[in-house]
Length: 64
Image (cartoon, rainbow, N blue to C red; front, side, top):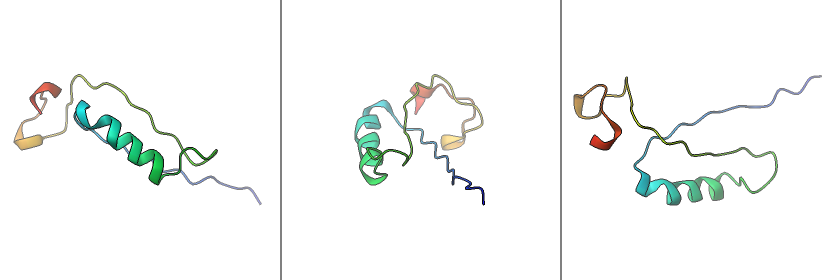
């Protein structure tokens, strides 16, 4: 019987000042120090399209 790994993707868009505490919480709660439990990474985002905070589309991320 083939084993199919369960895959879930979570994307979180937050201000830079919250990155370290959020990443640390994800690491702890997801037990990501244990091999095979998942991974988390950080990417810079300069612009967002399709997200409408406060009803404004295509905002520069600095406006958040």
